[in-house]
Amino acid sequence: MDYKIVRNGNKLIMSKLSVALGIDIGGTNTVFGFVDKEGKCVAESSIPTNASESAERLFERLFPKVDAVYQSISKNYYLVGIGIGAPNANYYTGMVEVPPNLNWQIVNVLEIVKKYYDIPTAITNDANAAALGEMKFGAAKGMKDFIVITLGTGLGSGIVANGDLIYGHDGFAGEIGHIIVVDGGRNCGCGRKGCLETYASATGLRRTVFELLCNSNDPSKLRNITFEEMTSKMIYEAAVDGDKIALSAFTFTGEILGKALANAVAVTSPGAIILFGGLASAGDILFSPTQKAMEDNMLNIFKNKVKLLPSALHNGNTAVLGAAALIWNELEKGKTQSSEFAPVENWDVM
Image (cartoon, rainbow, N blue to C red; front, side, top):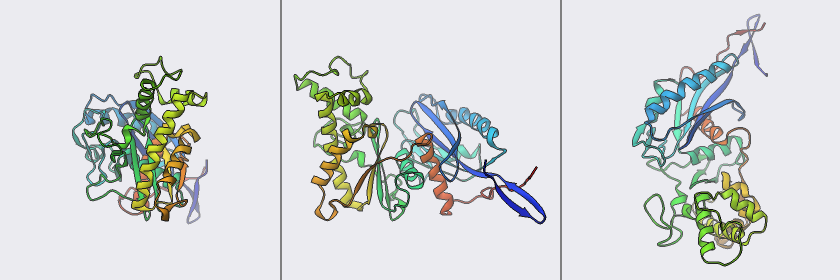
């Protein structure tokens, strides 16, 4: 363990190292971890979210577990802030507003957290947290203009311009997943038709496979798998084995995603677009058609200027790193203050 050694008169004292608590609220599990300034997760754990319960009940169960984990590291570490990633979270208001897959309505999460820890706390949606995680700890280190696309059950996005995350006037900017890419297309959970996430996501990939199976006689190992049983990993494994349906599904997904990204580039002129999440782990099977479609549809002044990169958040739980990066970013920019921010320096060297 590396400690910071300081001198107080003739006495050497040892200071605790600062950590931030990152919390990611998902529909199935809520994960948390204590993350230092370098992105090292020194301790982490999780609890079931129990999506049918209220937000208040979730935090009643969560913080005793947080306390227990913190006590196990508190001899060496000092908690300076809390960052939270959650679906439909509003950075400006601290509210989570009618999140999908959770039985909540409009909840002020920051007010609830204050009952347990009165230290700097910030919240944003999970895609914005991922963007901040990449900027502080991952593939976007040193960048001021980039976009992170999260490819999971749906498609989320976090947009950074001039070094700042774009929240918009109401806190909800960056919904690239809900750009309409096919007029009258697939039904989306948002209530509209043809949104990008209905095509470029793990769920969208599955839907594409079933459409291809219905419209083709090509043999495929995916034919005897139900929609509920099928996963994007199964489709990836079939594609690696040369399955024509699986390969066609990834090509179609990449083509739609790449065209949408070319349009996004024209708005903020990012230096890079980073693909994050389970579907991005498909590697070249997804990246190659996406890159080609992006360049083919790019405005000339942007061609061959925008990198398409995989996430570089590999150490520990990536969602926790993103949530922790949110509060580290706030603290470092002085956007939130607390008398408890300064690390405690009160250990005598033994």
